[in-house]
Amino acid sequence: MQFRKLAVQGAFEFRPPVFTDERGLFVSPYQEAALREAMGHGLFPVAQTNHSRSRRGVVRGAHFTLTPPGIAKYVYCARGRALDLVIDIRVGSPTFGLSDSSVLDPEEFRAMYFPVGVAHAFVALEDDTVMAYMLSGEYVKENELALSVFDPALELPLPAGVDPILSERDRAAPTLAKLEVDGILPDYAECLQIERALYA
Image (cartoon, helix red, strand yellow):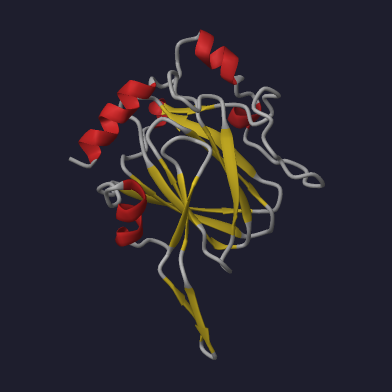
């Protein structure tokens, strides 16, 4: 399993080997040994798994969790195709304000690891795009917040030729600067402390 450090501190892309024959294919999108090699530890204790299906053009995010408690994620695409995005919104992080992306699909089965405190979004590039998540914490509506993917300061590589379909919450989401002024953004040092506790 290959891995790549992303431009956001603590975030990684993983690419497993895919085995094909006349029956179809077999792949392991999560392999603990690869995470240990990349990050020095395996995956967090999984508290919840999520499954979403989206039609072409759907933009989910950018979402982040109030920290504390904060949530780490491991994400891959089981069907369709998606542009997956991670944005560093942790105040004090050496990569604050930076983002990175990867195209996820069920051909190469790239997977993304997102540390506590970052924002995550994806754009469905095909109908019936299915995303699978493993989370370190359970969903609590009051703790889930949004950041505008259209914030010009972020310069996110949103695909041309795709009419974005967003929820009302995501379309009305504030910019990074507004969230910082409001004191809502996660603190980098606190995020690291929460992550250390996850892997203790």
